[in-house]
Image (cartoon, rainbow, N blue to C red; front, side, top):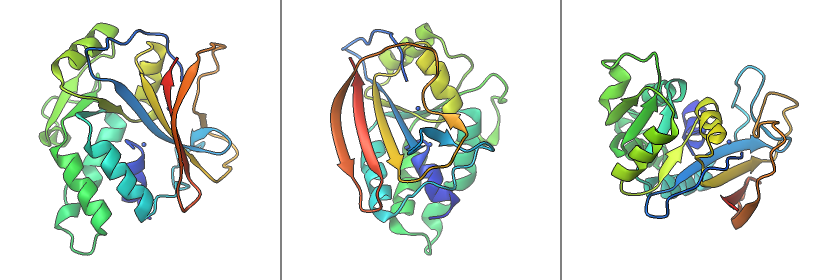
Length: 214
């Protein structure tokens, strides 16, 4: 699987908050791949260890395609915007990748950045720029979007986790030790109970663990 395939897992490219979820609104779902030793990327932000084959890619497509929008930071959004818009027109691309390209293009995207210009070309694909991650901003977003939202990217996820804004976790554990990098969970000493929703093992050895808060 090439870098574009691995990028599909990142929004599909980590935690613990204590915020309360309004049951009348959509949930925020954090979908992230981790190594067996608990890292979401290597010391130089490497994700080339992700094992994304056709089975897992189709799973990501079904899971993400059913949601109402993507929440990403600037780095992840620009990577995605540079990888996916032309894939559906490439007859040599695997069908699972072409399907994800269509999902990404059609899906509303909410990009969090204080520095991205509002006329940046990466925003032309159904994207809305939001400057700050605040609890009130996210609650307003939940109120106007009909459905659940997928949170992707380690830096943005860390901001959401600090504010207790993540409702469910899709943690994809890859069968590899990478020895160091950015850990999945912040080392803040917090104890936050989780409730197991689902587990599934894929043919390539990846295991998904789905949890909800408390």
